[in-house]
Length: 337
Image (cartoon, rainbow, N blue to C red; front, side, top):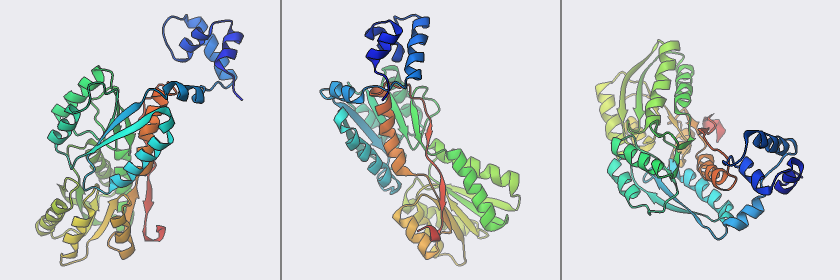
């Protein structure tokens, strides 16, 4: 069993309050004393008394607003499952979630939810949208000391917010390699993405194109279209793309909208090979039927769980939490199911 804070105080010849200040990096202590306390804590494997902290927090509910652009996007089903599983695990520490959902990448919808948050909001989990008004609002929250966790999408303009989700540029590079292997380096590729208001979607396309440009000159990107993660829009976008680019023989869907995209391809006159992202029920069925060759998965359940764990580490364990926290990537084919 590790050492206690009281025992550290005895070994260091200081008070419990001094130990507390050293462990929590608070002012009012000399650098020499701080180093001495931390060295003892490390040597004897000090860990905070979590049970004691739970009792302290039991009368102080930690309400966590969660704002997700998850309406109509099945990817977030597992994200939400992870969020609520973590909230249940940490319920003894006063954690509770207040989930609000909206559709797509409408900044006004997100701003309405942000403006409706209680004045005493101290922490927030959300999927941000790349838009000046949204970024300005979130910067105001940061200035007020609100702890922000960006889940599944991020904004580089926020200095203190922690990101939990996919490494989008890396996932794009994986998609580029997968395309090269499946086509043996020769294809007329059409790319379907979600929205330019999602920085990750932009990064994923950039990562994919970097690999193709540098390693697969025989793969030609004939077009790129956004579908706002909406199946109806995805259908229209893909229908138009196949008319404007009849040479298309490979499609990579780098965000949502799989169902609508496949519907348009089924109505097309010749075979088009398809790869996509994530492992929703629709994706798994498409793998089984052969409509999709492979999908790149990013562990949405773990992303949701880690978002809550990040706040737990910061609020209960008093850790300095910076991130980013990237989920692991893996590829599924029909034989994976």
